[in-house]
Length: 114
Image (cartoon, rainbow, N blue to C red; front, side, top):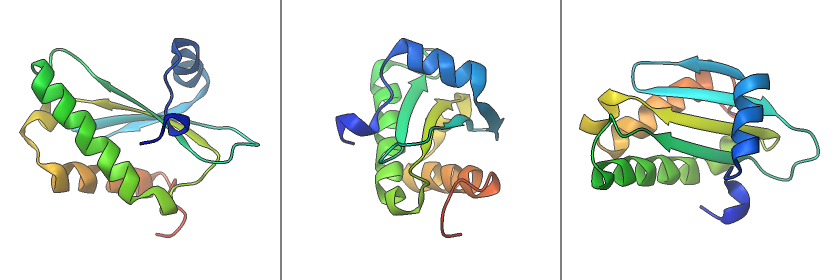
């Protein structure tokens, strides 16, 4: 994922947590906030230490980045999104992570074409 597609600054994270909306399923929690005048969406990822060791946490983040890369054309460009991975994601493969993410985004109508 390109740098301009990432939410990295702690102030941005806190703003999205405070002012944004959230929803979840068993595997993922999503916070999002609409921002006008933005050329493309931005994503922040968070996987806590309770989920597993560094290798496992990095694998989950890779899966989420790849899922966003594949859904890039369908996601509304005016969004800032934060994904928090929960404990059950440690046992999931890429396709299950993508399915869970797609389900949440379509449930909240954050996808353009679905």
